[in-house]
Structures are given as structure tokens and as C-alpha cells.
Image 1 (cartoon, one colour):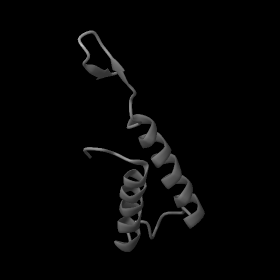
Image 2: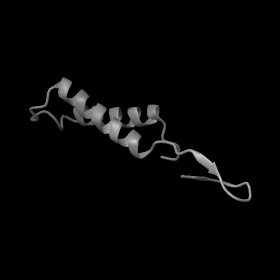
Image 3: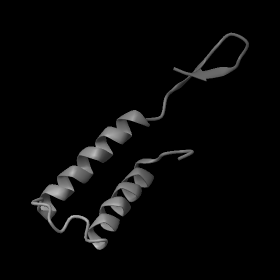
Image 4: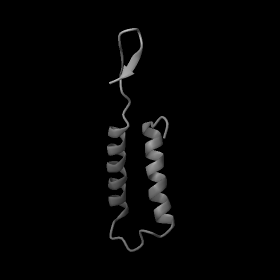
Length: 67
């Protein structure tokens, strides 16, 4: 993912969960829909923490770099 925004992360995770549901891969799972929502939120929160945008600080010579 080139520029992971919060919306893109939410869409991808939701797509993966929905694909698993539609493919009946969770039919024998004891997870409830509410629990799947919690799993979705938790995964999104983790990924957003990993992919958060970094502030670009100026360096000597006028170029910027992410810190």
C-alpha cells in the first residue's frame, strides 16, 4: 500500500473479513458478529499505528526527512 490512509486500512480489513464470511470460512467459528467487529477494530488500530504518517523535519541543506 503506497499511501495507507485510515480509510484504506478500514476498507482492506473489512474486505478481508467479509471475504472470509462469504466464503463460509468462519461458519464453524464460535465468534459472534460483535466479536468480529472488535477484531476488525483492533487490527485497524494496530495497522494505523504502524502506518501513521511521520512528520518531515528539515535537515541541513534544506532537504526534509521523516523522523
